Length: 224
Image (cartoon, rainbow, N blue to C red; front, side, top):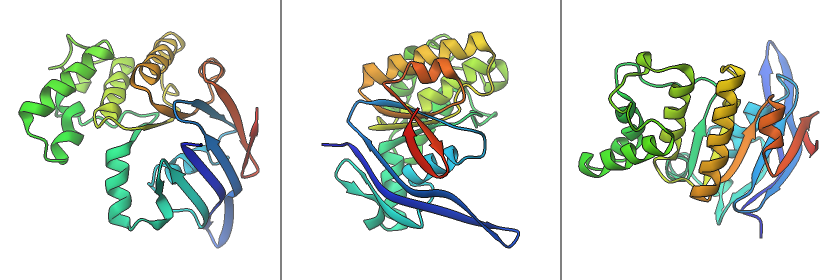
């Protein structure tokens, strides 16, 4: 049985009086524990697809099932709760809060969920150790390299123990050596934690490390 089952997703935007069809009758099926890369030209809709799958945006038509949850049946508040609890996001730009330390950035989702600091801090510290930053927990983002900042973002995405990880060009702002290191990290945490992962990427090495590669073109997904 598929962990993610997407049927007939459509998504359009109106811009300058014109309607732009981004996703068109798109289907997708993933098994639990699978790691899939989504490739395609810039502007083809990879980010839109991840936003729809993660509940950041609603499709115009179609259905999305994640586990036993039908996203379309949820209220906006229920979607927010599901997203915060079950989905981890990693973006091209890390979006860390500059005034907070690495560990404070990682524990932020837990604190928003009202977890006591005595519980949140050890979990955040453990994840920073897992991504290789156990000695950098008190450093603010400005004191970390680009690759280290993205590792903090990965730890933050995992701190709520999500079942689904969505990564949108996670290595797009990194040099080749740093990107390779982040590739290995993503693969390791995917396997160790038992995630289901969808990664939108232009990077052929990152795509090749995934279980499957799908191409988004003309609003639909096909095997790459």
